[in-house]
Length: 115
Image 1 (cartoon, rainbow, N blue to C red):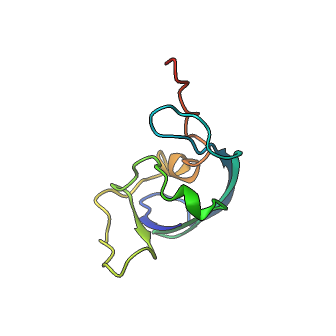
Image 2 (spheres, rainbow, N blue to C red; image 1 turned 120 degrees about the horizontal axis):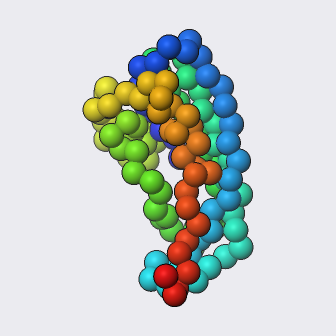
């Protein structure tokens, strides 16, 4: 998955990676469908441009999965022929850029069926 965002902070550049793991589960019961999947994300910030790549080797049978909604600050690119809205409605500054970078490892684990 590829994402583009704007940055409104004071740092001239950022190059940061993030490692995490996804648990793919059934939507209603949260019963795991497959073993945990390793995830690698790379974020590159140059002046006001943010590019983020997230790689996860998920079997095609899993289909789509849900992630935190960062659509106010980024657009996913490379998934359709549609245009990318630029600039995004909100450009994170120094106070929020680290949250955007670490959004893959900050995802909470699935709730248990008894929750």
